[in-house]
Length: 325
Image (cartoon, rainbow, N blue to C red):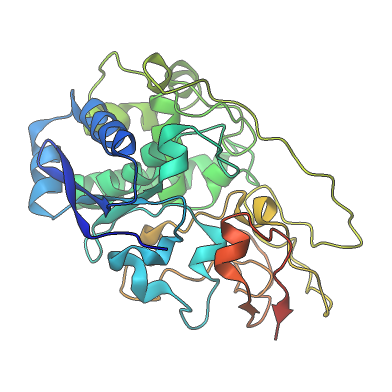
């Protein structure tokens, strides 16, 4: 398939939007709009750090997988971790790799099989704001808030928002902009009002990063968020991933059928911030075939190779992958 040239196709407050030519121009405009609105009330120093740090947004075409984006290509078949292309449709940026990515289908809200109930750019760009836009002092405050929330049981500890301070921030960002209707991964906190009521400390840091503007994602989204339809599953045929997408903590018994694409990608978006030290360092969250996820208590699952990646991720052969040890 001809993708065309990978070029800059848009700009939001100095943050460039890149994609291959095959990406619908509407998706470019939506990405520009979301970044503009997320930062419209942000303090000037946050925007300045993002631009100076080279923050870029890249859009993954419907016909592509995550590592087709040049900035993410180093993660393809990364040694010692899960495969990015079967577990993500978007990544957050770090100082070392400042590209945020998101799937075209999620921006357009058209035929999104993976995340129809949330906007992924808001989540992934939230990682970038934390990693590049905020100061080290501010990031330290977020870590302290996360540690206190975890220790006190402020949220269900099995919810994705408690995975680590990075997901605490990114899920909080989605709540701040009402960009999700899910309650499982955020322990019920999916609006700005609920975040303020449950976690005023995190809400105050949201104001520090984004300001307290009026914009909420549903006000001008391409369509309504909707809950994902689940395919019937047989526990005898598939693994049983947790809500965060990790393993249940038991060693899988081989041979094991690969989880369906929806199950695999459920909440295991690779936050590039999770490692941050360089290529491959952020590839440690546990899937069947990966290592134990930080904070999950899950046992490592051993090395794995997932075959038929593009077909599986793009939905052409959702159950064609097999686990190879």
